[in-house]
Image 1 (cartoon, rainbow, N blue to C red):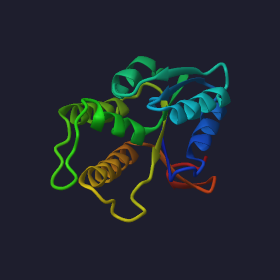
Image 2: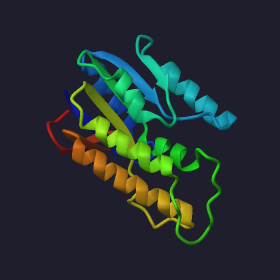
Image 3: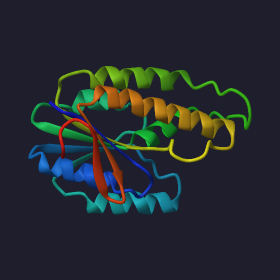
Image 4: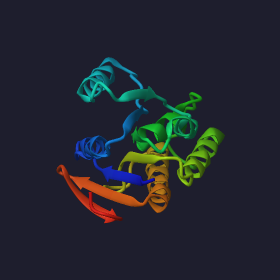
Length: 185
C-alpha cells in the first residue's frame, strides 16, 4: 500500500504526473474528481480532462465526502487518484452557501473540520494505494481578503497533514517531478 501526494502550481504538470503514476501502477484505477462545473468554461475543462483519461479508468465525481469515497473505493488491487485536494477544500468552504466577510477572522464551516479529520483518518488506513493531487499555493504573496487568506492557510495546513501521512511526496514544476519524500518515481 502506498500513499503519494503530488504538489505543484497551476499548470505545473502535477495532474499529468499523478496520472502517469496511476497508469504505471498496473492496478485498476479509480479517478476521484473533486471539480464541479460552475460555469461553461469549467465545464469545458472538465470535459477535456475526462476525454484525456484512459477509457478503462472509473471516474467518480465527489465534491465533498472524500473520506467516504476513499473508504468505498480503496482496495489492494486498486489505485485511487484524487484530483484535487485544493478544489475539495474550496468546495467545503462554500458548500453551505456561506458568504465570507472581506476582513476579519473567518469561521470555517463545521463540515470542513469533520471532512478533513475523516480524510486524515482514512489516509492512515492500509486499504490500498492512493495518489493525491494538490496545489501549492503558499509560494506567492499573502492573498488580499480574509477568505482567500483563510483558504491559503488551510490549503497549506492540509498539504502538510497529508504529506506527513504519505509515503511519497513529489513537487512538480514545469512538468518536472522533484521527490521531496520517499522513493523516486
